[in-house]
Length: 289
Image (cartoon, rainbow, N blue to C red; front, side, top):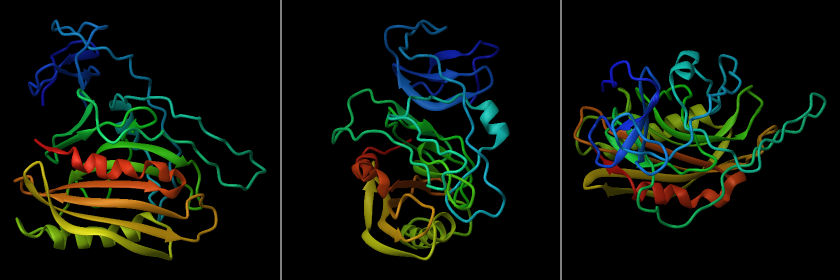
């Protein structure tokens, strides 16, 4: 998607033509967050969008090479190019002192109602071919490294523990991307086989072990009219140095009609169990582009 020439950073009408919607242009590229136009700040093309200027991105600590958990590090080049829609994390961050070995706990967003209000900001994943709601206060636009299972990544996250034994951080996330090759996709009808391979991969790569898995859902569904498969589960572990002793997560593979299906990955550690409900809410609100 092209930008508005040499225009300065600001909100502009959505380049994909969504009526009444705007996106942030940082002078280099477009944000993936789509937001409704509103009173307050006039865009360069005559529409209005009420949003405060994005705060500059502050990268979390990079983890040492070889870490085994879902402790992702910021890619410097991406962090410099991405304008991040940042909102205050409720409760802030409890930092630990150098002589205190207790893991640090980060407060997260508060739970919201069962449905999304009209005009809710959407995260647009053009590569995967889906969009879904931005959850608002306490969630950051995802600007960390691309997971192994997808060829690109869009989404949102917040930090739940800023330091874990392998040197990184623990996060809650709702992210998406096109499924990478080698995970079982052979075309329409292979959603279940792909989910099974992806579930094994995320369990092995992003969680402390040993762990136990409880299946909650493993079934075919329809997402905005497209065939899909959801695998929802709870992992539990007893690992020193982690605030969380488990996590509820869901993987959704959606056949968008493109060469690679979309993967939606949703995960909430049990330190923030009050947010478990957002998993089903977001899945129910996904649109296929």
